[in-house]
Length: 62
Image (cartoon, rainbow, N blue to C red; front, top):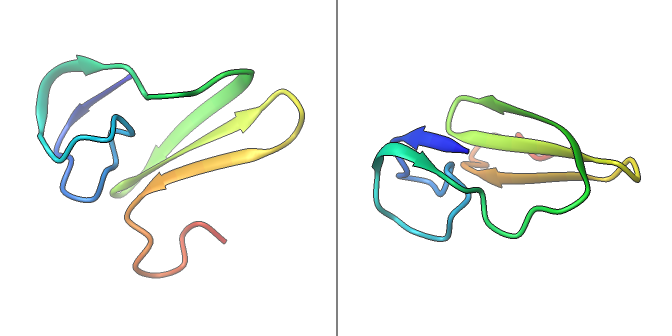
């Protein structure tokens, strides 16, 4: 779940709107762990894959 600014899609809910309450990160399944960084979010899946969303202006997604 995410709260706050959503200028670059960092809440992962396919909306450009900020949120003052928690919102579900859309379409995540089989997630083992999650973390956030400045303007982006990351999820490690149980199969070892990684999902990323949000701002990628400096290659944050790898």
